[in-house]
Image (cartoon, rainbow, N blue to C red; front, side, top):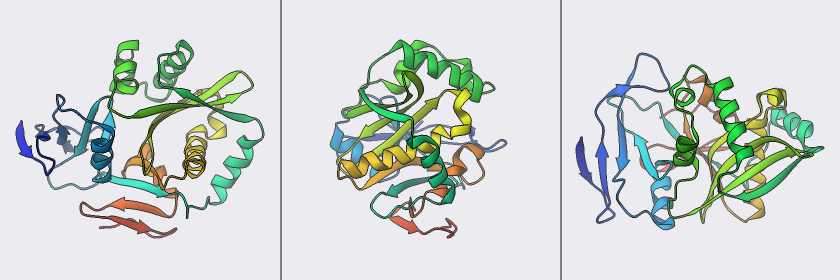
Length: 249
């Protein structure tokens, strides 16, 4: 691994060797990640997010692939976001009977059971489903990182429809991960969770909802470009893309 200095004093970055890309078959990837022993407080975590890093558990990382810039960090400016026709239908389909419950980040048997079911159903052929356990769940979604994480429950009556794991920053919310009951897939709970996070950010007076990486060629990531206007990090600054405008650098 190669070591690189950063503008933040003692914060060090490490670069992995090449490995198979998790998103596009046949491509090789490299990952730039923050020293796992470094102290990451909420301010530093926000700074990392603002320059295109993402959190997985307590680790912060960013793709650094040779000759490839397909992984584009994106965020929604909530004050100017307007749902499209499909998103308005999803809001109408769920708003009547789905209620949101804000919970602190801790292990709950009901959450874990839904997470396990979701992974086996939606990602049964991937590494996450092969390695699903309470321990990996806690490392991924409950590991302390120096800031606040909330679990936004989507419920119909007492039935748990889904959970949106959400980090809270001073400038916005970060959509870390969403898992839901596959039996309710027709309600588009993943999209509804993002729309709910947008409304929560507005309620809290925050500017953005961070969505992580948009990858045009990845079916699992391509949906993010439907939230417009959308801001994308080009490596130097966030650029705004209006509805219908292709995200090109």
